[in-house]
Length: 217
Image 1 (cartoon, rainbow, N blue to C red):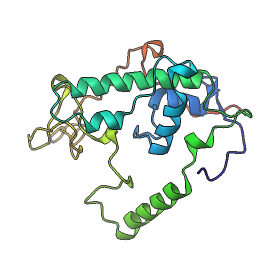
Image 2: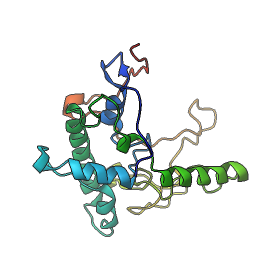
Image 3: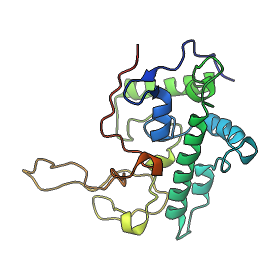
């Protein structure tokens, strides 16, 4: 169950002249900048984004698709198609204002963790802070999000820094970097992000070159 509700309407972004949370969902799709989506939100969207409610398709579950991707040569393409579909559907969802309640406040199901989720995250983060050991990373996810797993087509793929190939579904632990000492970008990643900076928003583009988090008073 949800722990409560928000008390103020969604703030409006000056640059987009839209709700700040709508701008976030329209570009990130997930519930965080990692692109992950907690199961509670997945269930909420699956219940509401359906053809019966006027949407172009039912909300597809990426995690279910990923679990059955092993050995499939088209797995990376299938996941990328599903990600594009989720982007289109979340934009249908926000365009309707379905992420807001009747008072214009962000629905708590999309923004607030359940009590169990909040306490679990606090426990995991406390463990990271107390030990100050990052050999296994600094995230506090209960499980690795799909966004941090390897699902790339061969033409867009990359390997570990030591040359070992990734297998579909592997947790991404390292990426190729610039190894030329003296370069300004020495030590920085060299893997393309796959973000199409020239693709218009209306065609599914999600790049924001001049985002400024200024809200209307």
